[in-house]
Length: 379
Ligand SMILES: Cc1cc2nc3c(=O)[nH]c(=O)nc-3n(C[C@H](O)[C@H](O)[C@H](O)COP(=O)(O)O)c2cc1C
Image (cartoon, rainbow, N blue to C red; front, side):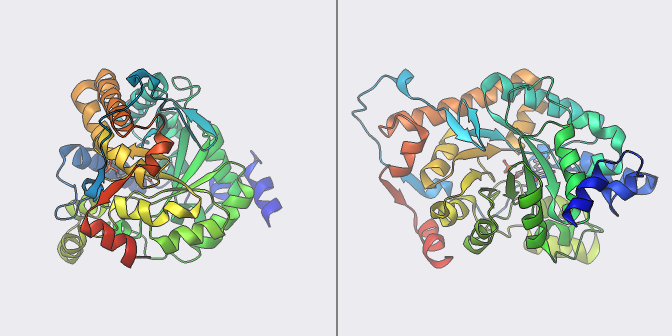
C-alpha cells in the first residue's frame, strides 16, 4: 500500500484528483472562493485583536523566575543559539504558521520568512490546503529564495492529510523546501466553522503513516486549544518527537470561526470561545516526555518566551503579534518587533544567571496557584 502511494504521487500522467485524493477539487470554483474568502477573513480578524481569548490567559504570567542580582558575566556572553528540528536557530523563536493561498498571503509569507532569515529564527507556513485545491497558489507559499537557510515548516490539517497519499503530502513539503511538516489538529475550531469537519476518526493512523513514510520530521500542532499530556503520550508512542502546543490564551480559533458563523453555531462558538488548555499548562504537562516543544498561543514578548522555555519548551512561537507588526510596519516592522522579542529572552536569561536558554529549565521559580493546579490535576 505504502509503495503504491509513493508511486502514485510521482506519476505526472495522473490527474490532480488521482494524485492528491478526494480533497483535490481544483475545478470547483465555489469551494475555491470560499477558501480564499476564509483566508482573508482570518487575517483581518486576527490582526484586529478581536479574537483573542476573553477570560482565559496563557498562565505564563504565573511563572515567576527567581532574580539573580549577581550575574557573573557580560550580557554579550548570553548565547541564545538553539537547535530545533535539526536546524540551528540564532534564538529560540519561531514565527508560527499563518497563511498562504492569496496575493496578500504571499506578501506576508515572504516578508515574514525574510525576517526569519535575517534574524536566524524559524518560520511556519499556513495551511497548504489551498495549494492542493488550487495549484496556481503554490507561489504564495514559496519562500526559499528569500529564506534559503531558515527552518521552514510546512503545514497541513490532519483531516486533509487523511485524504491524501503520503507521496502527495511529501510533494507539498518538497515544493516549498520545508524542513518539517506541522500537522495541525483543530477539532474545536472545526465544530464552529461553517461547513467544518465532523469526522476526526483515524488520526493516529495518519500520523503513524506520515511518521514512517514522509521522510521529514513531523510536528503535531494544535491551533489554540493546547495539547494534553495524554495527547503528548500518544504522539510519543507513534515515534513523533516534536509538538507545537498552541495553547489557550492568545488567538482563539473558536473565536475566529464564531465571528464567521451564524445562528446556533455562533452561539456555541460564543460559549466555547475560551475552550482549551492554557499554553503554560500544556508545556508543563508535556515537559518530561522527551519531546521538542514549540510553545505557541498567546506569547507576546520575550519574557513570555523565556517563561515557556523555563517550563520545558525548546522554542517559543508567535503568530498574531507578528501579523500585527507586519500590518503596522511591513518587513521593517516585523524585524523590529522580533528583535525586541529576542532581547527580552536575552534579558531574562541574563537576569536569572543563565548563559543559554536551555539553562532556564533549571532556574528556581514560583508558580501561581492556577498553573500549579493544572500541572498536578491535569496529568
Ligand atoms: C492569521 C492566522 C492564521 C493562522 N493559520 C494557521 C494555519 O493555517 N495552520 C496552523 O497550524 N495554525 C494557524 N494559525 C495558528 C498559529 O500558528 C498559532 O498556533 C496560534 O495563532 C496561537 O498563537 P498566537 O496567539 O501568537 O496567535 C494561524 C494564526 C493566525 C493568527
